[in-house]
Image 1 (tube, helix red, strand yellow):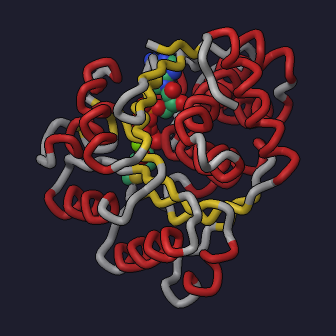
Image 2: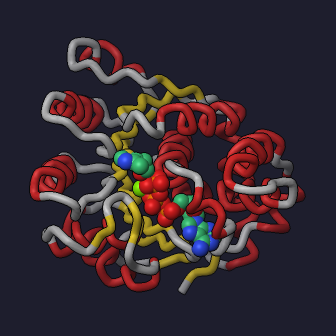
Image 3: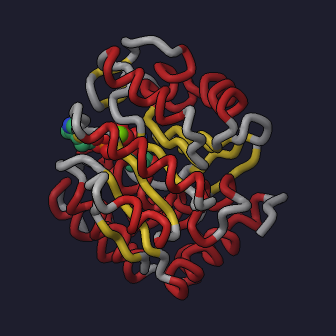
Length: 274
Ligand SMILES: Nc1ncnc2c1ncn2[C@@H]1O[C@H](COP(=O)(O)OP(=O)(O)OP(=O)(O)O)[C@@H](O)[C@H]1O
Ligand SMILES: Cc1ncsc1CCO
Ligand SMILES: [Mg+2]
């Protein structure tokens, strides 16, 4: 599923979604309380199988069985961090892809250090908003308005490349244009609608979708990540045609993701290589 031309991205995204539907990868999610419902429903709608298991007592048995691990620090607390680190270590040991959502990375020293420690455990993909990626690349607090971004994704291209080069992960920055880089190649996905920012945890949910796409194509994490972001954006666009506001968009986005067909994906996916 190597991508060279813009016109090839629609079929690439469709191939990823089809594989997720056919293979139904098991995704362990250690995620925040706000996002659990939307995240699990997003994965189910896409055809994946979510499991919100986070106890360090069961991770040694469970993590080796999963197809990918998703870690999100949104409602981080002292006792969850060791469980996150243990799961990441086991995922790496068993060569399972794992994906990090560094929610509000720049909000506090505790959160920034937790994210940097997790990054040292070699995530396959990191997906954040622009302020989160800038905070990580600079290893400094600030740059953020809590969990929301105070930057555009295009402000974070160099930060994303620098972070990708320093840690070896594919780095994605969400926004009006979703940017994905492995430190060398940079692609932009232009799907989605601004109203998606008005539903809490859409970022968390799309990071889980990235984990499902990477689960079925772990050797091409950049292609899988860009495809997941574009597919989620297409579901948002189609959902917006029926929505009256954020609450109904949440419902229609999930319905649209479940119902996406080949024609819609191939005709709507807007990914460009810069
Ligand atoms: N202006 C925009 N136009 C189109 N789509 C957007 C826009 N801003 C964000 N999105 C989409 O909304 C989703 C969430 O991205 P966002 O950057 O808001 O994440 P986030 O800040 O991490 O969210 P959260 O913390 O609530 O999970 C992504 O799929 C992204 O592509
Ligand atoms: C609002 C909120 N606070 C911590 S996590 C979260 C969900 C969006 O990131
Ligand atoms: Mg977020």
